Amino acid sequence: MPSVRLQKWLASAGVCSRRKGEVLIQAGRVAVNGQVVTELGTKIDPAADRVAVDGMPVAAAQEALVYIIVNKPRGVVTSCEQEGVPVVVDLVTCDARIYPVGRLDKDSTGLVLLTNDGRLHHGLLHPSFDHEKEYEVTVARPIPDGALHSMAAGMPLMGSKTRPATVKRRAARRFQIILKEGKNRQIRRMVRKVGNHVVTLKRVRMTSIRLGKLKEGQWRHLTDREVERLLQSLPQGVSTAKR
Image (cartoon, rainbow, N blue to C red):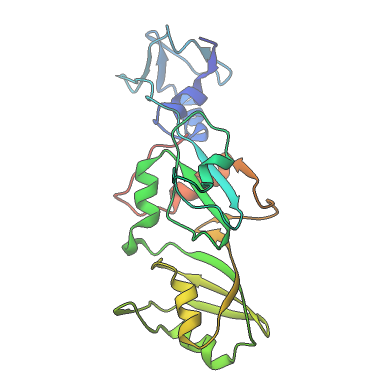
C-alpha cells in the first residue's frame, strides 16, 4: 500500500480534519509505532504502521468519507438507482457507495450533495436543524407582491402550514426563495397555491455550500474548507467524522 501523510490518514480514519490533525501532530499527541511524531511531513504505511492519538490506537476507517457536489440537470432523478431513468449518482465517477442528501425533483435543476457520511446526511435533513436551502424560480406569469408575501409568511399546504421563508423578487417572473424545510415538491405546490406555475426551479445553495459556476451535469469534490464549514454547521449531538 502506498505511503500517505499522517494528517491525511488521521482525517480518513475519522479522527479529525486534516487541519486539526496537523495541530495534534505538532502538539506531540500522535505516535507511530510507539514513537511520538511532530513532523508534519511524516508519511506512514497504513498497512504496516500502528498509529495512536493520546495513547489510544486508531483504526483505519472502513471507507474514506466522500463529499461531492453535482449540478443536476432536468430529467435526472435524485436517487441511487431507478429502473429506466437516469439517476444523479450516474453523473459521478466514484468508487465509494454514495447517496444523495435529500431530494430535488426530476424537473428541477441545481445543487445536489452526494456523500457516504450517514451522520452528515441525518444532520442536514432532520427538520429540527433549520438548514437553509436556496432556490431560483421562474414562473409562467408575472407574480404579484402579495403572492410573494404569502409564500414568505407561510401558507396551508399538504395538511399543515409551511414555515416562514425568505423571498426576494428578481424580476416580474423570477424570485429567490430560501427554505428551512423540504416538503415534497413544496415550491411548486406553493406557486400553484397562489395561482401560477413554475417554469424553472434551480437549487443554488444548501447550508454553506453554493453551486457557483458548476455547469449542468458537472460535479466536483468539496474542498477541505467547504467540508469543514459544512460539518461545523451541524448542531451539537450530530457529530460526524471529518476527512
